[in-house]
Image 1 (tube, rainbow, N blue to C red):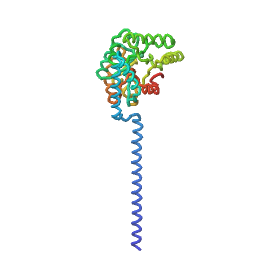
Image 2: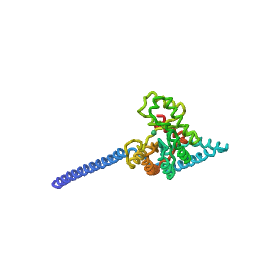
Image 3: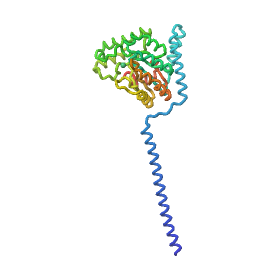
Image 4: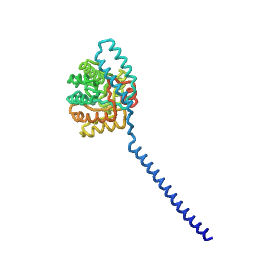
Length: 315
Ligand SMILES: [Zn+2]
């Protein structure tokens, strides 16, 4: 009897010990699960927009398309023979079928040409990238040789109007006179008709003009087959506030981290030396992220569709 009672006591003690152990195991498991959940949710909250690096295979394709683009640009300058013309037409059609690069950037400069433009051209040349320049007609008339150099070095030269006057938006016929005059200035300087893209002074979201005539100006451009180009990244170099070089670089690179397709707004007007000195680091940062540099000279169908969907043209 004594032995049975003794064994019973041992059983109770063992049961208590097992229950305690079980409680500990359950508490520990709950703690580990909570930690895992915290880490996962923290990662999602802190780094929502960081995207994976593009696979190497796409980079090879990008290089192929870039080479084809260079060939077309070269051919466009040798227009005499019929076979060159035929090849050019075929190549352009092929280029239209180009898939979107995994990461695409359009560097754009407004308000030039000026004394700053050659500095910017030097930086672009040293880094082997092409850009788009939205020029002002009155500046083009003043410095046609810089515009010729810009085009000769493979960049795209487009119109940003002749006089950069916001009040013209309230008078559509005068606005179109200004646009036509700027196109004529580019043609006079380069002997080439610029592609059908412009950037509106102050952008399509300009709050200065009255809505009705401004809408008329934008609609009139589309009726003429001219698209107006916006931006979704900026060096923030147009304001009167003086920003530091690092701020300007970060302003672009942060947008590039969050978006795989960007049009960057910068300025090459007089006094924009800081833009020129920030540019090498911007280009390096974009290259490190795997961006492919494009211009508006030969926009593919896919790129145009992407621009429309992102409201980067014809907003
Ligand atoms: Zn401007």
